[in-house]
Image (cartoon, rainbow, N blue to C red; front, side, top):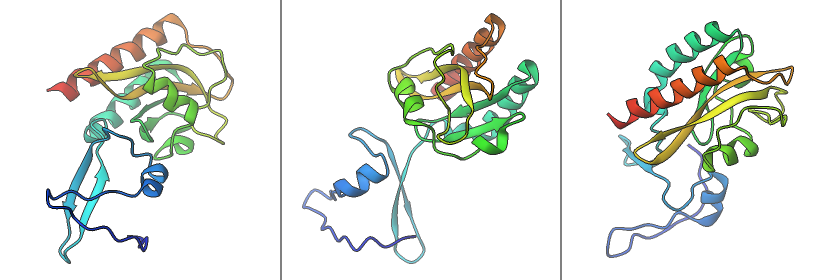
Length: 175
């Protein structure tokens, strides 16, 4: 845990304001769900909640199967980072923050089918060949991706596999 030196008081309704600098750094926007934890030494910890992250063990199995089916690197991300990755370039993606371009695709609910050279993770050189948002209960929670280092676009079968994966994960998050 890192001390910030910022102190805030709780108001009469039990609210505390998270400073703008921290919200900007941690990419916490209005409406961002936060999970609250307590520590044994009296800490109160706020952590960004990721419904896709709740499926991480399941997501690992899914990307492994998707990667084997397509011979590409497959990944599942939430709105901030790669939750699960499998395939030849797994190490370049797993646990990394996603690019701003991918964040925009997810936020705008874009069904992306490649061709524009959008990278999944800044500095990785891995280009998205297909990305489909994961939508649950009307809210976007992340995306399913296929990436490669050649800039090759996905074929129709790969597009359908990613679409199916995103819709299936969205349904899992609703249950």
